[in-house]
Length: 256
Image (cartoon, rainbow, N blue to C red):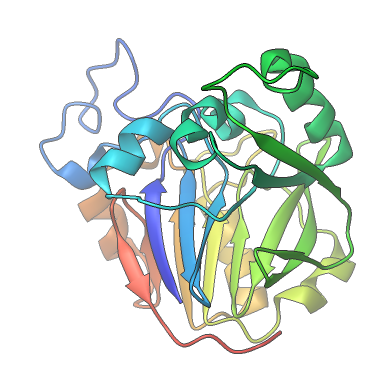
């Protein structure tokens, strides 16, 4: 399995518009963060996890030439705002998009032109598939949904093989931890150091990492208030890393 972190920032990105803090003005490229999205390459397939408004830029920067399926965590714009930019991958045939029912409805409402009976040439052909808490297949790859709470909003994280992607999480229901056993890689939300009503802060993320006990953990959805990448990196255990845009990791994949 190969994982490319296309974006690791929160909804405003880093630098944040109008901000002149030390993170937003940093010359370390790891402190420049587009909105969160991850590309998973496994079993010969490319699976995109979330597709935010920076997707076109991310795809060009990381030379993404194929997407076989897209899996969406929730309906917020920073996770679905780039769906129209999937056009190069689905003008001739449909691209499968997997999301909860309410997210599917939101996508149809925001992009009605892509779902009319008469399909206008050049528009993206998005095949929407509602999913729940039961495992499903995406491009022939087994996917295990993980229920998460983003404040009061129910959203989904996903496990693929021995990797789990848990973005925008504030609380993990107790029964969901069984789905997160024996992970090689955990990708998890850690917005900042100060507490937040709908995202984990660093301390909460570290507590969940300690409970899940993955071999390696990568922090995502980071805001400028987390601090400089180089500083945060030195504050963490050796198997916990602040992810950054363009980071690529590879590891062996075992069946769930």
